Image (cartoon, rainbow, N blue to C red; front, side, top):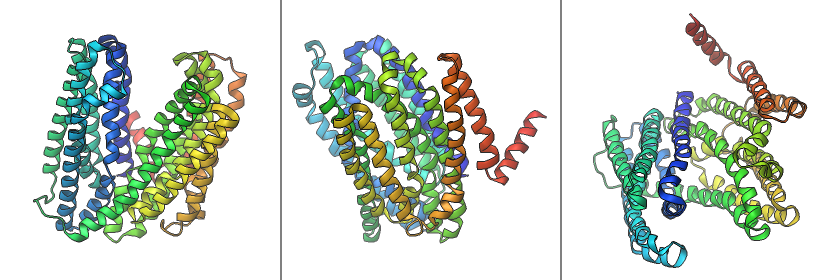
Length: 497
């Protein structure tokens, strides 16, 4: 079930992302550079208003999964309706703030041409409704995830993610301008909310309206407060570096820094979707009193996700320079490729903490995750600042890597055997340690081969192909368990016959 859920969760994000990238040139051509910038600006501002969310959805997934596993229908319904009331109020307040502040936002903070001012204000006012719809959409999505029905949530996410991009292009090509594109997106969001409500209603669960009891309100708000701390700290760790680089090294250096950082973040960000499915699974096991069943699940997910992340790292290291050359030009190879490699290593170090932090939170210890996340955020800012002063963008990336290594290792050593009921030694032997050893060995062998091959597209394709083949074979025989390998080989034999 976990493998299936992981693949569904990954697909739900990957397909819309590819479609979004493909439609960008069409939107720019139809709306113009300024029009496309206004649409981006509106969606970004609406997204930043999401900071009002105290991350109640994280607590909702945990407790919905626990109560469903324990067959506690009363608390399940109370938890659902508490979250629904919270996100309903959040949507209304956020929408009201955006709508009333539309004129001020355009007048004081953004420079738009006189001919586009009125349509920009209208786009912001319409976007206010989009904020309310987004809150409802995001909250309704937690129900299938808590029930471990990632197939249903991913299907919805993929379908409406594709539809919103296609509808935007259709509206732009029809000549409706910025306002028409925002209206098209609102229509898709409203349709998505209606579909999710219908889907949730179709599950075999009792969701009769109930006023949440004090125990439910207290547990959910307490948990979510610490989860919110992790969210804020993570945002600080991920985005403050760009402000520091821009302030110290200037906007040109920031461009050379941002492009490779964004590339590495998008690729490894997708693999996070593979690991996040363990969160409701661990919550359900805790709710049903079956914690002993968690160890093999935990070790398996840790081993597989680490190996996939390392494979992604290998592809970035081996093909990153050629990709940057063909995507944004030779100048980005000289200045951006070292940043790309360092940031990929930093993100790999961060990824080692994903599964233990999810299990830690699922078992009811979000304060530990929140405190370490805050330390990582503050430490990361300090390291990036010192690195930028002494080494420019390469120093910034080095500071990011150093902070991720120190805080990541500290977190792993602290939680294992305490809040995560698996010893660190066991996790190292049968979890991420095995994946790191096998994957790094293959990559270290192939990196010198890369420099011996021609510096061309052919040479890059050859070495990446060799890496993927080697990693796949090594994964089949050293990473995947005996039962999973036997099942895969049996499926391969059936397909050949």
